[in-house]
Length: 465
Image (tube, rainbow, N blue to C red; front, side):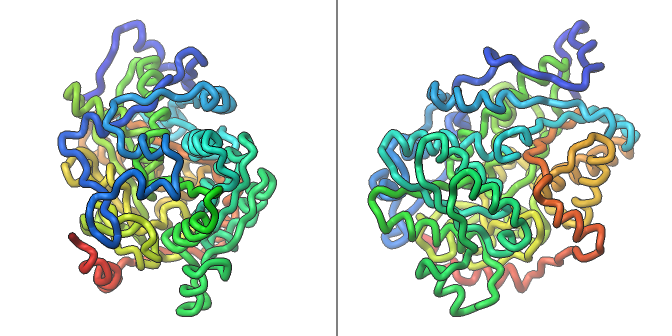
């Protein structure tokens, strides 16, 4: 049941938009590791299979990010210079989705945290800016990275521009072809963008030799970006999801949402967010999961992944590489195997073979949930939302909307009131090719098979310690 603050705050439920002042924005990131009942298993060195040391990560990341990656402190202060750039789009608004509620005609109150007002149009700058900041502190000249649909690459390109750092992006080939305006956005912010797999790295050349028509994957693009970063000591690598410090930075979303739900006089029974590597889901849910653990709240937190790449719902909890070439440490996570090649759906940011260590451990412990949805249902949900709320959501974000509709329908069937909060992680204004393909009937659902799972996991059995 929903938690009500007082009678006066109940009046605020008539409002549609909830804004925080600059003085109310979070001053620290929340580190859920401090409150997890079972701490995550350590990453392992890919050769020795022993826990990695901080110095093993030094060629890729600046020291401050390594400390955040391994920290067990509950709160980590946000630097003033990062806060100053955050003010361009933070605090972000929370909306009551009254139009969608009316369309669904169910006993639900629906709220969404809108991250589309950032320079990249998504939640990704929340971590891109601090990552660029800490690299600047170590006089890094260039940052290399990967991107799926392009939101992360755009965010890092913007962040690097703020600190005078060069940016080199390896964009998954299918998204490079499907989303040309994302590439142009990155170019505008000053980044060099290459389709992955490319002939610029050994990892890319190996993939192209085996499959010249490869549509690419985030795992391949990560391998290419890491390989390039390791070629010059003045270069570093940045990841847009999966790692602990990335998820840490995103918790500004959930911390703001807690205050905004208090303004509304409401509290979520259910929190929903898309799931690629984990930063989107973690950003809004981790502060609430922390309350579940420490205060006994009962909010359900649901990660929504594509049915074509179902690592949480069909994968296994194993040690695996975060990239295809095997450059990264072995991470304990739900995975489909680092050689898994996902179907070429438009939600490019969700086409990743594994899930973050933190999200995986929380799912394993039953503290969060996961569902997998087909893309046609998600696009239809996105269209319903656009017509009722006026925002065209990114293909990734439509996965959350589809699950919101499912939860509303379930509430109607059960005759039980429910408050739902979801993360509208970004707009789809440069993803219109996806909607065009949907309206033209060119999209299809992908039926993930047991054979795909078996093939994907076969190569990683030998990696287990």
